[in-house]
Image 1 (tube, rainbow, N blue to C red):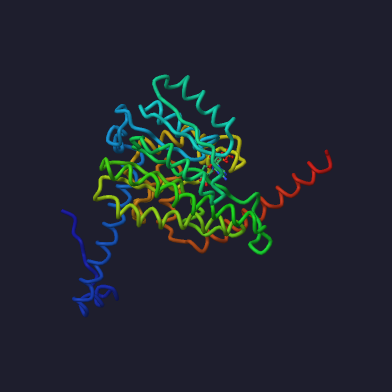
Image 2: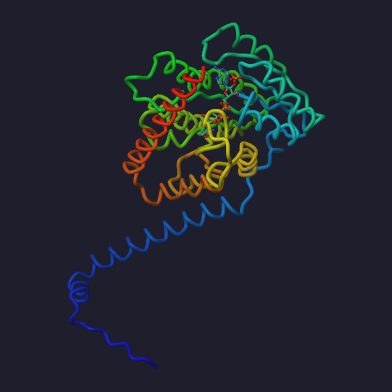
Length: 341
Ligand SMILES: NC(=O)c1ccc[n+]([C@@H]2O[C@H](COP(=O)([O-])OP(=O)(O)OC[C@H]3O[C@@H](n4cnc5c(N)ncnc54)[C@H](OP(=O)(O)O)[C@@H]3O)[C@@H](O)[C@H]2O)c1
């Protein structure tokens, strides 16, 4: 048997003997911190890579229920409309461009022929009472199982706050905050009546990490996260699930990224992950923000890493540097285009 010899002359040993209660407290604290870290890490990885989320059947899929998707004319919103139709919902698509919405409807028709569709052309940057009244009329008789608050606007390019055009600020706030409140207020009574529903609010990492040079957009997405958490708690006892979907980059017109990579999924892959992980916080589980989920695997790992490092100040500086260089490139591109005209 190996003989373990304790060197009782070591300063740590003598300190421990001299302060038994303090040593026990520090040992307990260390064990608790490690256990907490290990459990949270296990939750993040198992939810992101192993577990499946709540079935869409719980929200009326294949039972004649409707999904309402705003900003469904392109990108992530169009993909939500198509995948929800494939999952067995009738779909109402809303945005400004009727022709692009009709393209979404054609895609639905070829992907899910049994699904009914409705098109609502609405400019969510305007507080247009007539348009909201007409929206309310259109949904009056519908059994709405799902609402996806997806329509969104960001800055044309990263810009210092003082140089941001007022019209851009107004539009971002109107579309990303006020329209979300108004559309949600119209839809929730339908869900309350049937005691079930799913509200997906498409958020951004810019709402979690303050993003210099996208200050208005970043703040609007922070609003969305807080609104979702508060609303989620209110509606949970009524069988309605609210989920703020924390999103890093996705290929789209808004991100101006055209090629997918491990960190930047296509809208199809992104939406598939959102719908497969409903009700699971995934990457957001480490920091435990209520009613927030980071479901796409690489976004989940980034969210986890941010939580582990807890280095928000560093992330803000990194993002600021990134946005300065994106702005430089965007201005150069604009110059080249102006010369060509
Ligand atoms: N792509 C990313 O990297 C990323 C990252 C984080 C979060 N997000 C969020 O994901 C959501 C979808 O963005 P996306 O990337 O798919 O961008 P996108 O392709 O530009 O889609 C934006 C959608 O919003 C609609 N929209 C814009 N202004 C509107 C208005 N005034 N009234 C009604 N609808 C309006 C657009 O339709 P019309 O132009 O036809 O109106 C379009 O359907 C947004 O909320 C965005 O903040 C995206």
